[in-house]
Each structure stands twice: as structure tokens, then as C-alpha cells.
Amino acid sequence: MSNDVILEARDLTKDYAGFLAVSGVNLSVRRGTIHALIGPNGAGKTTCFNLLTKFQQPSRGTIYFKGQDITSYAPAEVARLGLVRSFQISAVFPHLSLLENVRVALQRQRGASFDFWRSKSALDAYNARAEELLEAVGLADARHLTAVELPYGRKRALEIATTLALDPEMMLLDEPMAGMGHEDIDRISDLIKRVSANRTVLMVEHNLSVVAKLSNWITVLTRGQILAQGDYATVANDPKVQQAYMGVGHG
Image (cartoon, rainbow, N blue to C red):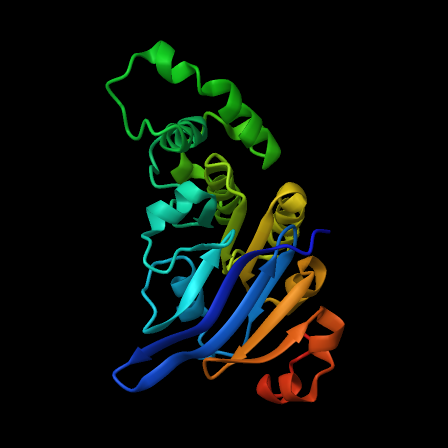
């Protein structure tokens, strides 16, 4: 595993009229890792995630991606650099087939966004790669179903396929297991493990058993500040973390 830092935040702060949702966070994500951002409710995880993915601007601090200062960039600009937040694009066309959804994402990646007037043969050029991506997330058998027909867990798999279509170096996953049953959690966990083989993943996740299974490194936030960092065993056995989770630190 490379020790290169791919994403770094220095003194990341978000102030809402005197309320510090995120306060002085210094975060480093190493290339090739699955890094989890966890914490009790109200810890500032979502705000921190929104700052890192450029959906909100920090009040103070700097964000670097591959050594480049991206603090002032828009989400689309950082996506072009290879930093993509899954579920920001989602299965946005519920009445298109799965194949068509992935094909639209591939068009975006090539800079041919929403060229619906292009000829069928031009669009068909994307089919082979779209089929490969659906195969990678276990949806090849459902390629001709519309997105709206999918059960919840498989919709998430489609969202990951559309994210992979953008060929990101780093994927940011916002609570990928939210609302899922055990079977779907296992399936999506395995999928995240597979797709992380040649890229970096940062995820916000409430399910601590998923965090234990997937993460190389964990950052625990509480009250907008970093409480602890380390591998799962280190974090789970930290008395401060156990207290913050009121006895549920072992998940």
C-alpha cells in the first residue's frame, strides 16, 4: 500500500453564525486505502464530507487533492480531477434502463454530456463499457430493467456503476449502507471492497460492523473535531471513542 497522501485537509472549519459545525480538522487520506469517517449523531461528519467534496465552502482551511489546492473548486471541477462523490450523480433517470443510465455517465466522462441528439451508432459505442460496468457491480442480468424497477440495494449498486463510469481515482461514499437490510449490506460491502482494489475510498458510514470489515483507517469526529484516528482495533478500544458512542464503540 502506498503511503502517498491523495486527499488532505488542513484546519478545515465551517462556522454557521458562531456555531462551529467543523472546527480545525486536519485529515490525510492515503492513496489506495479505504478511509472511514465516523462519529455519533451531530459530530459534523456530513458537513466535513460536504466540505471535502466541495458541496459547501469552508469558512477557513485548505483542501488538497494530489497536492493541488482545490479549496475554491466546484464539485464538477474536482470530479474532472478524479475525485468523485458517489450518489451525487445517482441513478438520475428512473425511467431509463440500467444500461442507458451508465451510458449517460460514460458520456459525461468523455465530455459529451447529455448529447441525446447524437446518432444511435454514436451512443452504441458506449455499450461495451457500460456492459462491463454493470457486470462489475452484479447488475448485468438486469441491464434492460428501468432504474425505478430496482430494489433499494441494487439501486445503490447502479449508483456505484455510474460513479465508476467517471473513472475516479478516488471515490467518496456518503453512507452507502443507509436504509439497507443485511443481505444488501453484505453485497454492497463486497462491491466496495472489489472496486477499491485500484482506487482510494473515503466513506461516511454509521454501520460500525461495515467500518470494521472494510476500513484500513478510521477518523472519529465529535463536536466537529477529530477525537481519534487509527485502525479499527485502535479506535474501538479508545476510551474516549467508547464514551462518545455511549458504550456502542464496538459496533
